[in-house]
Image (cartoon, rainbow, N blue to C red; front, side):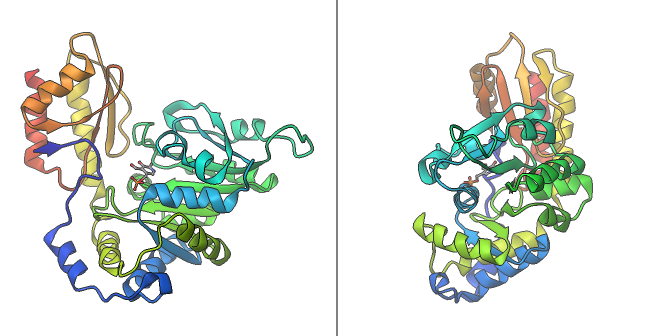
Length: 338
Ligand SMILES: Cc1ncc(COP(=O)(O)O)c(C=O)c1O
């Protein structure tokens, strides 16, 4: 089976599994699981921040950030296609009682000017209080697009001037860094909180971290408990995360190269109308009239190749560490045969 539905479909390698079974564990709710503590310290150091908290999912780390940074009735500024709003089951509204101010922007990206124009005046009691700005890098529904650091810095300036908190959904931050060559620390300095995922491009079976200063993480720990995300002998899973950070960041560019290669093939095919610029491991393209997205995916499925529809005539491929060179050749052949 060739699975291009997401980079979350990877299975832990033998080496990762060995690291997991030999982990030293404790009860993480009592904060005495040594492997979890090691992972949290490692992630915090990587981002140059004071502390981190291990959580089951990227949805939980994003939603904890929203909950800690806001009060019920506040407003969050983010892109209309941001994962935190579009793909998390209405959790911001449901769990934190906030409203959203949804911005437009090419490839899922927002900018400082737009953020500034949408901050509600503090003195106007009719409007919700704007308290948080959220950005996603890389941007999933923006085709894995990578923000220019300058843009993120300009938004940070607006947040500082207006006393707004600034959260980064960095589920695929390391994919962005693999392209720009920047350090994670540079991003840690800019944001009040950063969420990173271990279970996407980095190949761990589960896990995300929310990273921030000590006060933020102390509050986040309480919210994680309240959301039902405090876990016990979870060092077995944290060990997979440590392995992922140590071994799988370095190879992310291979996934990007494969995605770009498929992008080039798609561009040459008559039944493809257009391909979004491919910056990392996510490839989004629009089919012309010959196939609907359903027909196209069904044809691929006959060859045991699986991908995701992303709307009418739109399909997404995501490359990852279980997508091998020989699979790439098969996908190219299959696409050309349609
Ligand atoms: C950009 C982004 N943020 C957050 C998440 C949520 O992660 P999880 O599936 O672990 O809840 C995803 C999941 O694909 C994502 O793509």
